View 1 (cartoon, one colour):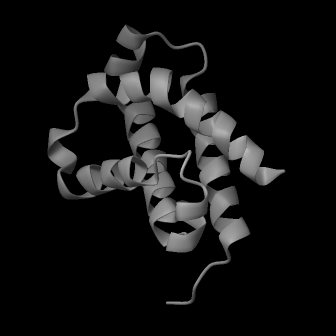
View 2 (cartoon, rainbow, N blue to C red):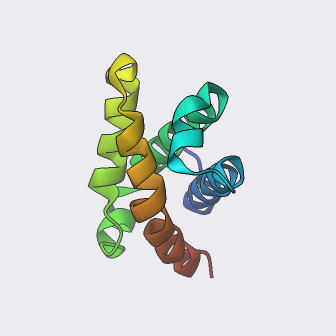
Amino acid sequence: MSRRATPLLVEDIWEAIEKIDRYVAGLDRDTFKKDDKTIDSVVRNLEIIGEAANRLPENFRIQRSEIEWRKIIGLRNRIVHDYFNIDVEIVWEILQKDLPNFKSKLALLRK
């Protein structure tokens, strides 16, 4: 497998966040929890975020320790290895609390 360049991985993460934002725009918790297509799309993009984060060079992640890379990668691992036990309530909380913070920190990296 060829190694993807760091700036491209950062863009992959950014694009996945942007997709998630579009998918859940205007939805409330209850609507989200009933929408299997949106849940599947969001979970897939969370997986992409975690996979891209995992492929970032370790020294890059260390130098940007303000971002909780291990937490992001850990979420990906939970999604991939425990897919049938995903708690939609936790996913919603991540979208509401963690993703906006992560996005703002990632925006600074893109400059």
